[in-house]
Length: 143
Image: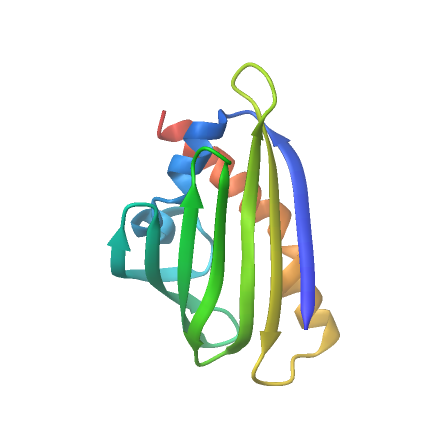
């Protein structure tokens, strides 16, 4: 099991970041290693999304996601995967002044196969700051 968290003040509004986070269809354009997205179901602020990702090998996983724009949250739970035993996490976003927000991204994953510690660290902790910056960059473009 691996847990990770990134908390950062970003130069984009809370609403714009939330809009980018819930724009799942566009993840292959700006989220590293995501090769394809399939929206299995979407109703209001809930979605079931299957991610196709190229990590050490090509893997897929399906998440149930729930967005709460008023609270500034997006949370997910794993539905099924050929790679993960567990993949739960979310975003918490708060206003931080003029066109800024404080974003907290947290993740709790467990893999079906043994993963060496140094790879686990890179996958879970090493890539997170860059991924959060990628969402910020995409949100700025989408303004």
